[in-house]
Image (cartoon, rainbow, N blue to C red; front, side, top):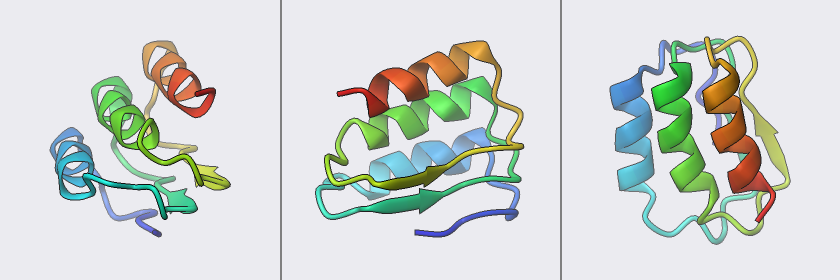
Length: 78
């Protein structure tokens, strides 16, 4: 799934997490160059925790700080 450079906000990240309830087949997610922030990264982390096949993930340049980065790292390490 490719959503780079589309202005993906906190609310859009929450909607993405809710609209993809079962990410078991999702192998790639590109969200770079957005306005995600730490809170949005938390929503993305919820989605990632349901994506065991994730092999290609990008979230650079999306205003994510250390708190959001930690959430993402924990979700990807499961």
